[in-house]
Length: 149
Image 1 (cartoon, rainbow, N blue to C red):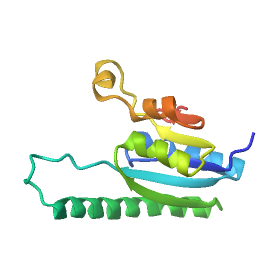
Image 2: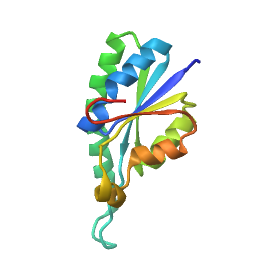
Image 3: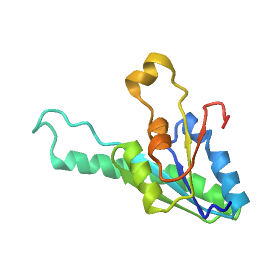
Image 4: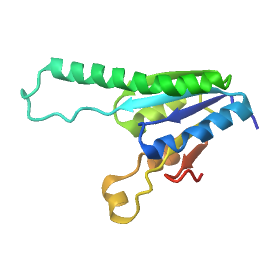
């Protein structure tokens, strides 16, 4: 089995960062390119006319800049380990954007963390990881909050 490209999706939460060592190690073992993805979720719009278009634009720019700062730490770590790596910041619904990026990047594997929700919270809030597992065009590795794959 060969994997040429791994997509690691992160929101920088402890749950998603628990998957980072797995993405790094798999990229090293398979000599795969590692693409780190952060998705900026849409700003929920209040009643029409409440925010100007400028507010949405500033939200996106601020979120992108913050994400790029966090991504630079991960990029540096991967580069120190001689892993071919790059990042992207997309905006939209996280599950949709992860699935789109997996297809666009022709990923051989997607690595995501799971929050570990169960019961009513899982039913109520859903799970990005669940949706990605069901719909991804390639295998998906999910890593629980304790680092268990």
